[in-house]
Length: 193
View 1 (cartoon, rainbow, N blue to C red):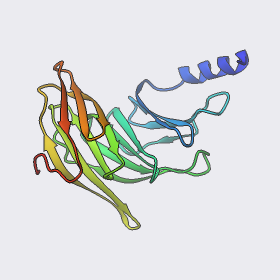
View 2 (cartoon, rainbow, N blue to C red):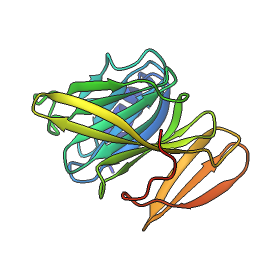
View 3 (cartoon, one colour):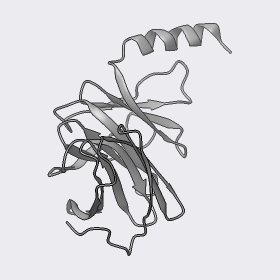
């Protein structure tokens, strides 16, 4: 390990705004870092020293609480405390291929603290401050983007801070100290909104 590269990476890290969440793109070996400055930093992990390739801005009015990545369509979802989710079309690993914001999903029941991309159904699961777990169908076509709330459940009394899907079982964890396991299949509507 190169000490000079480590020192440069450490200096660069101290110049970043406070970080609130992270998501990894394994295919292109880059990280998406949500910040308290209402932005998402795109960080190529193979570069030495580590350096932010570009910053996704103009998506939120509050700190970014969670990020999720759609590897197949190269989209990034970023939820913020302004009760919205920004949807970005991602460029390539290099900074010359810029990302662009496709849409901003609003009308959430409360700010989302956890996001989980469900690739089998092209949907996004959100864990919200009010204990609600909801699912959005995020359709992005040539003419733009749209999102539709497809289901909603309230398994918790406190803010939902973690989501994980294993098979057809969605696990959600919350600040009320509970973990809930629920059947979560694309064709099953839990509660229509």
